[in-house]
Structure formats: structure tokens, C-alpha cells
Length: 111
Image 1 (tube, rainbow, N blue to C red):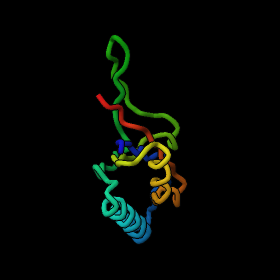
Image 2: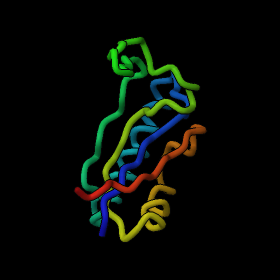
Image 3: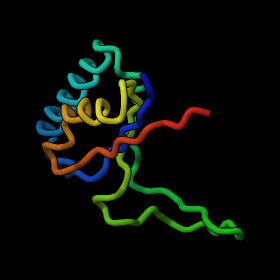
């Protein structure tokens, strides 16, 4: 079993409190299912849309990240799976697909 990170990108956040609550319940149910099956290592956290970028030898700080909004990382989760294919398969239950988002699945490098 290896560790994999899910990076949640894109998706549309609802302005409706009722819709937001329904979406949140789907996330809770999906995370619970991953946990009960022994795949959830760290639930992770959602990320704010704002931030700073520090880059280059001069360590210049700018507002950001301002990539395409669909490319911004909105949150993450750490899971355990047999391999990358299995981790990708597990991600298919994620509610982000219902709101136009996607999941980037990346293996965690063992050090």
C-alpha cells in the first residue's frame, strides 16, 4: 500500500446555503466511506482562494496564485491505496465531479 494525495481543483461553489449543505453532506459521506474501508490517512482541509507566491533567487513575493481558476488547488486529502490506478479509482466517488471540478491524484514520494 502506498500513500497518494488528492488535489481538488476547479468546481463551482454554490451561493445557496441549502445546496452548500447538500454538497457538504456528500463530502462527509464519501470521506466516511474511504475511512471505513481503510483508505483515508488524512482528511485534509479546504484551502482559501487567496494566497502569496514566493519565487526566484530574489524570493519575490506576489499575490497569487492566479492561474486559471479551474487550476487552483481548493483542498487536499491523503489516502492509502494499492497503487496509482487504485487511488484514481477511489477518487471517482468524490463529489467535486458533480460541480465541474476534478481530482489530481499524485503518489507521495517515500523518503
